[in-house]
Length: 281
Image 1 (spheres, rainbow, N blue to C red):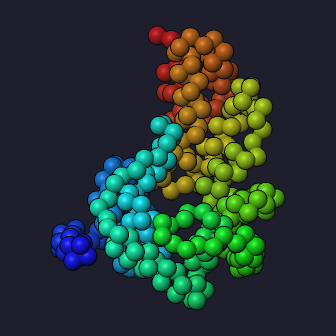
Image 2 (cartoon, one colour):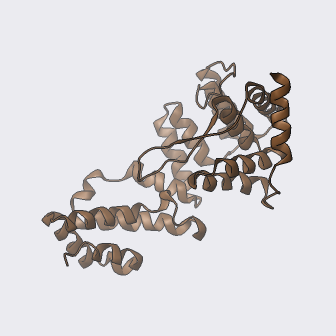
Image 3 (spheres, rainbow, N blue to C red):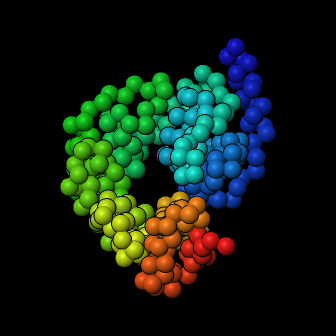
C-alpha cells in the first residue's frame, strides 16, 4: 500500500504544471483566486510552488488540506458560506505535509520569524488545528507570545486579530486603529464596522456617512483589489436598498431619494447606476 501511494505521488509529480512565474507570496495569494474559480488542482499547484520556496503559510495550508482531504474556498458573501474542494491525498502524504510544516515552523521560530510566532500563537489557542498534530492549548503562553509580538511592533492588524482571540477588546480596537491609521485598507473596513453608529442606518444622512466611510476604505486598497468582497460594502448597501425599492418598499424608495439629495452619488458616481436600478420603470 505504501509503495502504491509513493508511486501515485511520483506520477503526480511528473505531471506537475510549469512554474507560474509568481513570487512565493504571489503564488500563495493566487491560490485563493483558483479556489474561487473551483480549480482545486490549480490552487494546489500554486500552494506547492510557494511551499517549495519555503512560504510558511502555504506549508500550513497544505498540511491542513492533506490532513482533511480538501481545500476550503474563501467565504462567499452571496452564498454566505464556504465550500470544500476535494483533493487527492494519502495518509502518507498527510503525514509528510505535517512534518514538513512543523519542521519549517521550528526553524522559522528559531530564526525569530514573526510569521512563525503568529502561527504558534494560533496553535496555542487551539485555532486552525491540523489533523494529526499534537497541539497543546495554552492561552497563557499565547498571551505571552502576543506581548512579545507587540513589543516587536509586529503587523498591527494581525496583532488585532490575536488580541481579539485572546478576548482583549481594548487591545483589539487599539491595534485596529494603529493599522487603519497606517493606511491598511482592510483594517479601515474592520474598524468602521466595529466602531460604527448602528443607529445611523435609520436615516439617509447616516447611510450617506456609512457609504462615504466604506468608499474611503476602498480607495486605500490597490485597484486590483477594489472588487474584493471586503471593499464592496458600499455597493451592497445601495444594492440592497435598490432591491427593496424594486419590490415596492416605499421606505427604501424614499431613502434612495434622500440619499441623492445628500450628494453621495455625486461623490461616488460608480454607485449611481445601482441606485437608479431601484427606480420603478
